[in-house]
Image (cartoon, rainbow, N blue to C red; front, side):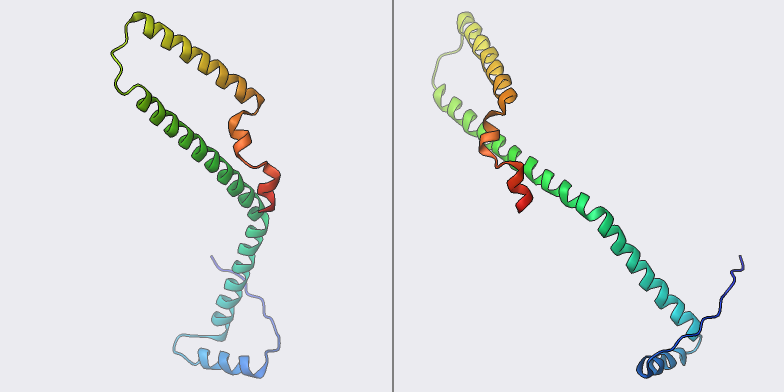
Length: 139
């Protein structure tokens, strides 16, 4: 494909003009090619900055959301770990379960799930452990 070229005339400071002449003196180099490459690179960098300006705030917001989720997950993981350690310590040397004990365990588990559902509906323990979202925005 043959592209059309448009002639441009502009002024360069003496020091830039000398540097351009030195670069163009190399075999196979031309001022047009050097300036074309330089202008293309400069414009590409400007476009990159535009992308940062357009998508940067969104990515920052997503990063803050991700950090909040990670903190909540860390708190839940720690909570479950402490609970499991407590339970294993509590039942370390007890005899095996019989049928009434197993039934009682299922009932307690169902009650625990109901309690968790109620707390989640009200904001839960995690909501009290974590800072409000407004404090994250300040960070």
